[in-house]
Length: 173
Image (cartoon, rainbow, N blue to C red; front, top):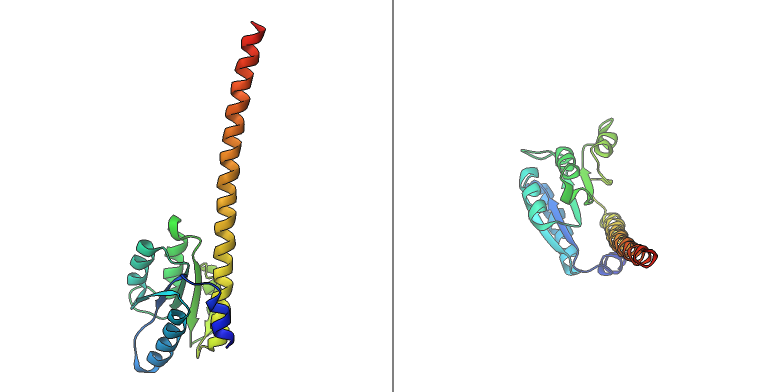
């Protein structure tokens, strides 16, 4: 019940889910996919980090949920590439791993990950972490929009001051 309430509050969120397909992971991947889709999210699947980067650049997801251990580009490398791509830099990245050796979490955060989840993934925990990412993206978009409006007002004010200054100079001559 908690899962549906939290995720359902944010329909139409685009999530790129990157997983390596193997029998052990398949059930959990399908469960996560089903829960996110059932609540109105668009789940875009990628089979490796390289494919995920292509999908992310094309679709501009709100969240990337990625396994760390993947072929071609690891989840950590994917995260670094996302952070260095201007149009994706603000994407919320959650890295997932079953093998948390010394320094894995620190390396993930240094790569720019926003969150980290251990396998086996507990669905309520994952959904709450996705919720945090969605809230962050919402606040960031609102802040960006407010900044753009402020800059537009500032440009208008500068134009009006310049026009008024020209009128005053014309009256003084």
